[in-house]
Image 1 (tube, rainbow, N blue to C red):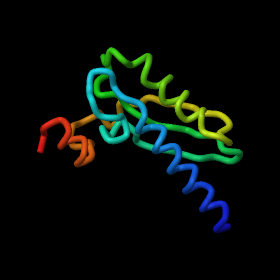
Image 2 (image 1 turned 90 degrees about the vertical axis):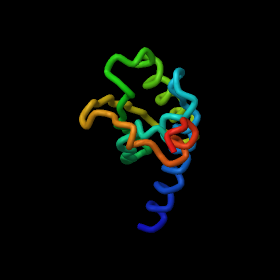
Image 3 (image 1 turned 180 degrees about the vertical axis):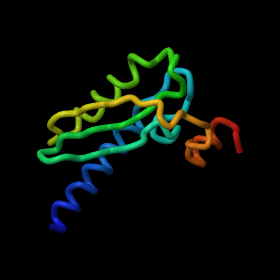
Image 4 (image 1 turned 30 degrees about the vertical axis):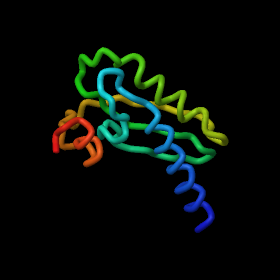
Amino acid sequence: MAKKDEHNEDLRDKIVAALKQVYDPEIPVDIYELGLIYEINIYPINNIHILMTLTSPNCPAAETIPSDVEKSIQAIEGVNEVKVEITFDPPYAQDMMSEAAKLALGFL
């Protein structure tokens, strides 16, 4: 069982790295550090489900960010299917940002 856990941890690390390459075009911080990613689920045969939000329901990048997320994860070797689900529950709040994101945006 440990081997599977190690594989999932390794894949999760790669997914996080891929998510850190996706930016909201209006904010100079990646979506992972912004706190837009609520869940990363790895299912059998490397099917990936991402539950995420946007900074607002009217986000101008609402069309591009989810497809950028899907493309960046799909590029990881061994990944099968990627499903990106958008939710606004709970609504996004600035306190979801990492310390690094708050620092980069001048909130600290």
